[in-house]
Image (cartoon, rainbow, N blue to C red; front, side, top):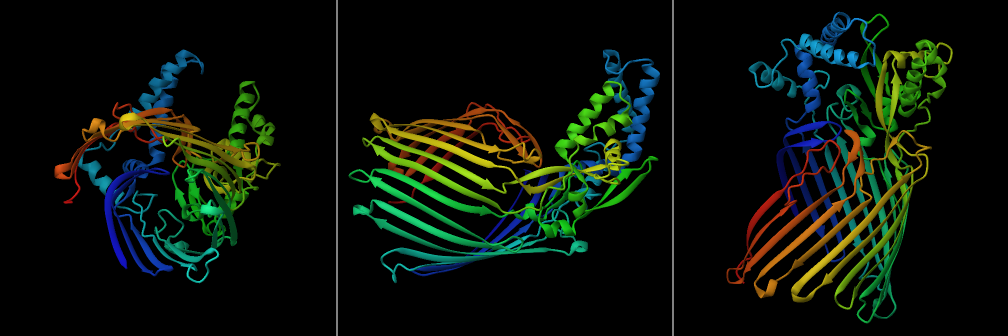
Length: 581
């Protein structure tokens, strides 16, 4: 048996930047052989980015094609300082008069530097936009390429015809990625060696047993071995049980103990994406060894020069972002107290911490415990309660470092690294790494569904999820948990109102506010509530159902992620024909 699927489309995607996904294509093929006790599958996925491009780099490079950064900032500075000197003589920084004059100076600086700027909608702008969005080089263009492929083989065999005292299964899988972005996303340019293959394989054994009369106790145990070419192989044992009570086994208690791990994804291993404000670099050792980036900067004489940053130096010659921020604040405070800037820089240098303790990324390991109950009470109430607790080792997260371009972070004689910080000769890198401190998560979930008279049903659910990380041990990590601590759902409906063939459902959802952390940016997502509704009418003689409904029917806009577009209301009407009986 086999099948092939092809998809295409265009959309906007928010990741590290916002991307225009223009005519993306996806090919998927699958072949499978199945028997009574086994299956063997092969499938492949091929991605094609089409004409997709990065909107941020498109904007930057359209402006740079019109006028270079040095020329623009020189003209802006002339207009800004000229206004301050001529229009605000003697104005003291920090006073209302100076602040008002600064706004005028800024407007004059922009007016001078922006003369002749390309205007969206004009033929000149559109010509430049088309050229830049078709150029696959983020230094001058904005297009990105993705021809990544995935191949996967998996199989399973069940010994139920050979062994009857236990349900025994074995299985294995093999997977091969081939990253191919031609250097626009990953470190896979021709100069860096071309497409990157990543192979991994795994195997498992699982045994299940039913005990006690009416199979009231079910036990399940398994062990799995997995190996990725970039990381050590690991074994993950797991065990669980379900114990059923009641005459009809309507009360069920479950519990599980699991160990597992999460290999870093392909991006966390091999990305090499310069975003301008920061550069994302995958944490696989092989990636760091092959990585390099040409970075422009202004030397002491104001000349624009370049230097090449090599991957290993990012780890050996950088400060942690948190210490660099604290250092800058301390220097500013010292200067405000009358300390000479050079002296302030030196006396506060002890605040800075080097990033030498950051290691290459490793698989994340987890030990998980869960206990729960699900049952029917008095044939009317369905209750489901669960609690989980997870302990992580090597929790995967991002960390920011500030790399100095000409100095040495370990130089405590001439303080050359500190001088680079003061002069802005730095580059921010966002690395993929692991937490060294304790990380745990826990959660509780409660769900109730109640059958009311006259076909009415009502339900409610609440969930609580929390991640705890030792910030004193890992102050620079960005965990990206991105989950509200509390969620509440309430619903009421009727399957058939007074035998009229009319049914309805109202569902109200509320999510707590939470912190969103991602490569695009960090920020708070406000709490919000949404009301969804649907009403249906069945026409039995025509085997047809008419549905009318909507999501967020009150049209109260909300955001699900920091920087994302607001979500409004969606309404629908559908007609479903169920076929001839």
